[in-house]
Length: 303
Image 1 (cartoon, one colour):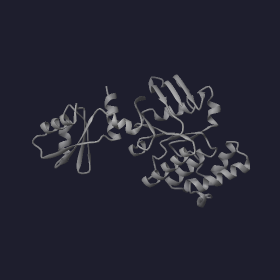
Image 2 (cartoon, rainbow, N blue to C red):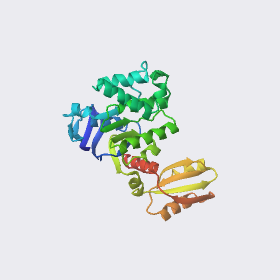
Image 3 (spheres, rainbow, N blue to C red):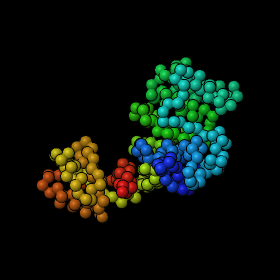
Image 4 (cartoon, one colour):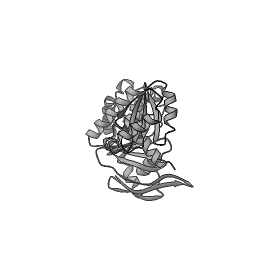
C-alpha cells in the first residue's frame, strides 16, 4: 500500500494533510493518534469509501479511487461502532453477509462453521447480537469482516469498548491472520496496542508526525526522560512544568515521569535538580516509552 500527498478537506477543515505512507504486506500497521487526528478519514480513503481531495493512493496494486469497486471485494472493514444487526442472531448476521459477498450456499455455510469455532461463537450461534457482551460482539464483528477471506483488513479502533483480557485475545487473533498472509491496518489510541504493531504512524491534526517501528521510534526520540521519586509529587509536577526544558510531566504510581528537551542525560538531571533544589527527590534517567514519543510528536506539532 502506497500513498503520496494524501489529503482530504471538508470545506475549510483539513482532516488529512499531505501524508505519505508505505505499508508492507503481511504486517500490522497502526495509526496512533487522539480523536480528531485523521485516522478514520485516512482509513476511509485507503479503502475507497472517501475520495481524496489531493494525492495518490495505491492499494493491493489497484489505483484508488478509480479501482475502488474491485478493491472492496478484497478487503474487510471493521468499524469503530458495532455495525451488524442487533435483532439478528450470530448465525443470521454471518449468513446475511455471506449472501451479500456472493458466497455459494455450501461455501458460505462451511466458512461460517469455521469462523464460529475460530472466534468461540459456536455456543452462541442462536444468540441475538443485542444480547452479547462487548467482547462477544467484537469477536462477531471480526468474524464478519473476515468472512470472505480478504487480503487486507481495516480495523478502526476495534477495541474501544472492550476489557483488557478481550483486547489481548483479540490481538492474538490478529497475529494469527497475519501468519496466514493477511495485511492489517488498525487505528488505536491505546499505547499498549500501538507497541504490538510491526509499523506505526503517529497522526495529529491530520498530519503524519512520525513513522516507523515502535522500537525505532523510541530509539530515535531526541528527548530525555527522567523519573522523579519523593514526597509531594503533585507539587513537584506543578513546579517542573514551569521549567522551560520540561515538555510534560505525568505521575505514575509513586514516581513522576518527566519528558525534557535537553542536550544530554546529565544536563536533564542537572536542570531538574537545580530548579527543584529545595525538594528531597531521587532522580534517575529512564528509557523512552511510546507514550513519550507520542507526547514529543504532539509538542513538535504545537504552534
